[in-house]
Image (cartoon, rainbow, N blue to C red; front, side):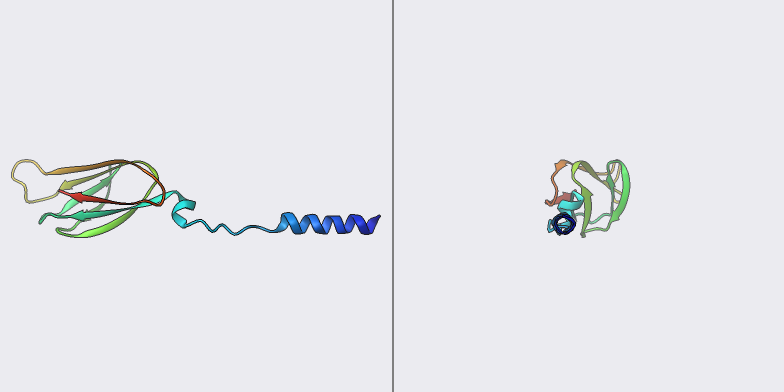
Length: 106
């Protein structure tokens, strides 16, 4: 009887003790996506994500940011080279995990 119980416990430990490796990509595990920021202007732009300044984009440059999936607002605000008002470009999307998107401005 004790032998049967011991074998049963060992079998249960073997079955439930094995962890499966999570083979999903990191973007799926972390629920993130990549946005490529592409400036086609000869002026620098301040980049805001949901109202928070995250970087200054150099003129005629390309860079990437990693964002959480869900509603995202990315705004590019011209920093110099304007006469009266800066050019403002807005990228408003519901973003899915593991998507690669591009925001080209101005």
